[in-house]
Length: 244
Image 1 (cartoon, rainbow, N blue to C red):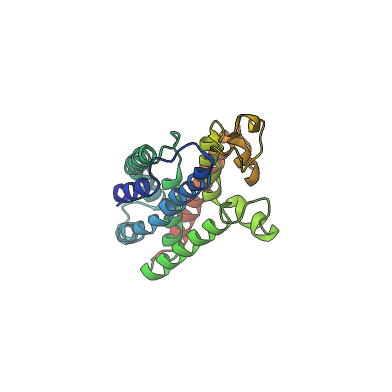
Image 2 (cartoon, rainbow, N blue to C red; image 1 turned 90 degrees about the vertical axis):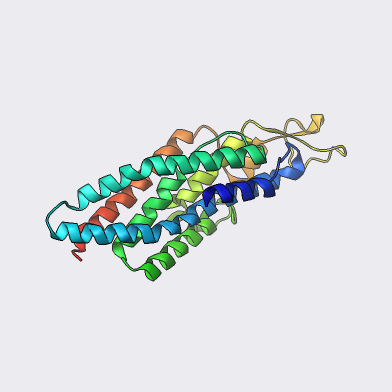
């Protein structure tokens, strides 16, 4: 599924060039790749429901508890998620001509599924809530409405806990912080930078329109790891409280 999506994405955004008419397609591709990969995690809902049903029976028999289940579920998922993210990144980045990068998006999306499904062990309800949550994260992540003009309520209540926002920021900085784009034969640059006299655009000008700064990768990674931990902890609490 993810390989097919990577090929589709790579061929739609095929061999993007470092010229200004490709700046917006680059940004669109970054948003699509991050948000849709997150949304595809809804496919994990039925699998986790099966695991949860098995866990409920085996906990009733005194075989193990919620801690063992959550830790093993997390560790077993790591190699598969690493394979998925590596495969998707290699294919899509090679097709679309992105700068190399990686992120923890897949484990975050899966952790959200674990939390919601642990609280609502019903296929339809869990699926609807996960889909709704992903729609919310896409809306306030920074692409559809830039953080500089996002409504204060959505910005301060949801934007800063939106894992898609940090993934989008990281990929944007990775793509534009070191890139130089040409302004074309007419030399009419859509962004004004110190390279305007050379008919070029420094990629950092794109980041400035979103209010993003470089040198914060470590901070973003730390926040993403923290969100994973919170989701898993809340999922563990939900399993502890629900005895059936």
